[in-house]
Image (cartoon, rainbow, N blue to C red; front, side):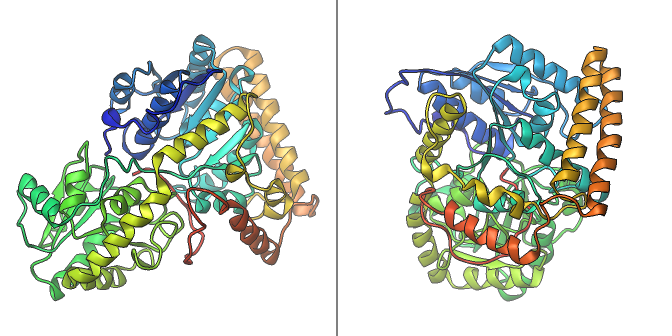
Length: 504
């Protein structure tokens, strides 16, 4: 993962003459979300703002905060929702009261749930940044409830910040309506620089790698989302054509032991590293076989290093892998993945040309632009400025035409009934003053609201029912608007709209 201790993307900017007090909240304390939070908090600290970060102990985010002079507040929260979520929400509410921020910035789905479950914390203006919507890893009933929650939670969000166009489109398709803002992820191009042949050799010497063996590298958490199982299944197809090829899978995660048991020749598993630059420099090719993404930092770091990418044809990756920078393959297709990897490992000239083009394209994703735009959005939410046009999304595109998809969609009237029922349940719980009372009120609210929502859907009442043609038109228009001035032009290339996630 990227070490932000020597990252200073805004160090030449003057201090803000009207400083704000900001609390960032994140359940992930490591990986791509932690990198992002550390960069954002550090940039805002350098602007003269009073900034703090609340996250669970462990990981590297607390260390990043301390190195940047940003106070860290311990917030014990688990990754998945459960019986303790109410207590986590109450704990976060106490932290908000103690720090008294001008804006609360909630990162990722768990903070988004805990931070908005009791409405806006003490009425404080609130930004929610999903870094991958909450329903992406869910199935069945949990998927439906997650979509339902995000539609409701948007009511208590003063800005919904999306890291990429794919993430924004997915929210619109799921019927999440609210004040969308587009702030694409960025990379610190002063740290991630093009690595030529000499730099590749030096990195391989430091890592103890063969100097000339064709090398593919995959960096990320070892999870179903990141698709390393597809990569391992594809690798024999690569070595059948290129026997000398090697694959390094860098990262930790719940799938590690299962993948190791495959015992595929030529595959090396490497523990997660604080700084991935040597592995990127040493590689001939970077692979992202993910099943869903937002705008992955690894992809941006790879192109800034001057490495071609072979990745899944999904939103987030398609925003980065444009023609001439690598190849896109269908998700969950080991044969197609093997073919594109082998072709580049057997033809270094192709990989070198694509790598040079990738390094040039990385200029569109400079982190300085990202943090400046995020600061402008934050000032707007605090009532001290105006969001730049490049972050704005036409509100009409997130209106009734975009409310489609999701098992509970039954028109706006039905959804309003569900929202009111849930809100009433929360109020009952707060009046009780105890976590048990709140949990009971929440359950009653969900039951009452779900009935109202489903009845609205059965009767066909409301104005939110968009057919496929209408939704397609809204998406096309949304892409056109979202592509104006967002760290570069709107990427070309297709790819089905599938769930995104931005964490490494």
